[in-house]
Length: 91
Image (tube, rainbow, N blue to C red; front, side, top):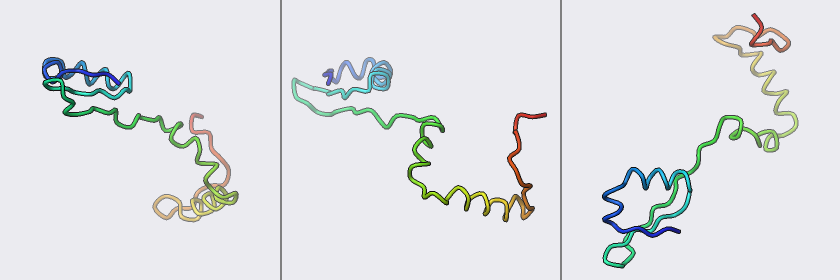
């Protein structure tokens, strides 16, 4: 935990916020040698892959098949989806 003065915070707020973001460490703000506030880092950002990485562990075994069947039955704008998986990068 780092300690800074209120004056230092006022003079270099942008740099201190950058440091808080990068170092992910709590910062204590003091005025007249007394703690007046604490800055704590917010939640980190995740990529979509990181956010969904554990999804397969939380869903029941048959959830994938059910989702696929429901998707094919409803489709986009009521259209039925074709069977099989299409390569989205194929021209």
